[in-house]
Length: 296
Image (cartoon, rainbow, N blue to C red; front, side, top):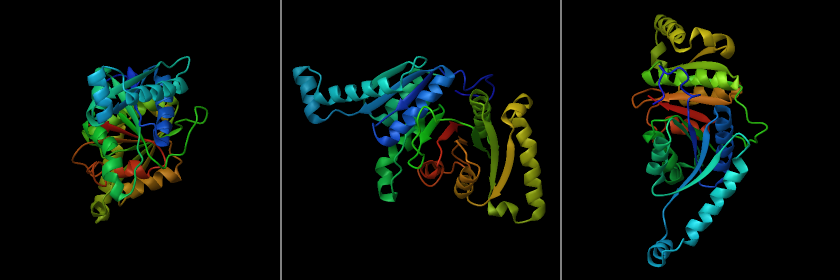
C-alpha cells in the first residue's frame, strides 16, 4: 500500500490501470493515464470489464468460438492501445469478464503497486445510481491511488496536459498523511506547485479564540506533512476556508486554476464523508480538474 514511510510513494508505481467504457469521458481519462504512465515509467494497462450477453454466452459455450461481442470489444481496446502508446509507454489492452467493481481493483492488485485512472459521467440524481455506481464502488474498494476524471474536466491532448498546480485538501487524518506523501512526489515529478487547503466547519469557528487555535494547529501540522527538502521545489501555499467542504474546494479550484485535486479518503471524515452520497464523489463529478483519492 502507498505509505507515507515510503521514500518515493508515487514514483515507485509499476503500472497504471486505465479503466475504460469507451465513452468520451473515459477517453479524456485515458490521456491522463498515458501521461502519468510516461512520467512514472510505468506500464499502461487499458482495461475493460464486461458481462457476456446471453447470445454471446451461447456461442462461446456451445460452439466454443469467440463471440462477436468479445471480438468487437477486443478491437476497441486494441484501437485505444494504439492511440495511447508512445515510444516510452507500453500500452497493454486487457479485456476482462466480470463485474468491473471487483475486476478492476483485482487487476490493480495483481500488478501492484498501481494507480487506477477512470472517467465518470456523473449524471443527475436519478442517473447517479447507475452511471456513477461503478466509479464510486472502485473508489470505495481499492487500496491504490485512484485518479477520476469527471464530466466538467475540459478535453485535453498530450500537448496541453500538465499538472502545474496541485491542490492538497487535508484534515490531518492518517489518510491525509498518506496523501501528503503522494502529493510531494507528484509535485517533484511534474514540477508542480502545491496549494494546501483545510476546510473548517462553521461550528468550528463559533469563537475567535477557537479559530485562532485551529489555525495554529493547521500550520504546525503542515510542517510535518511536507518535508523540508520539498519546500523549495513545491513552494506550498496554505489556505484555510470555512463552510461546506464541497463548495470551498470547488471555489479554490476555479480561483487558483488548479490542475489536480488530491484528497486522502477515510470513512469518518468531514472531507470524505460518504463516497456514495454527497462527499468526495460529488466533488469529483463537479470539479473542473481530475481528482486523485488516496485511501487511508
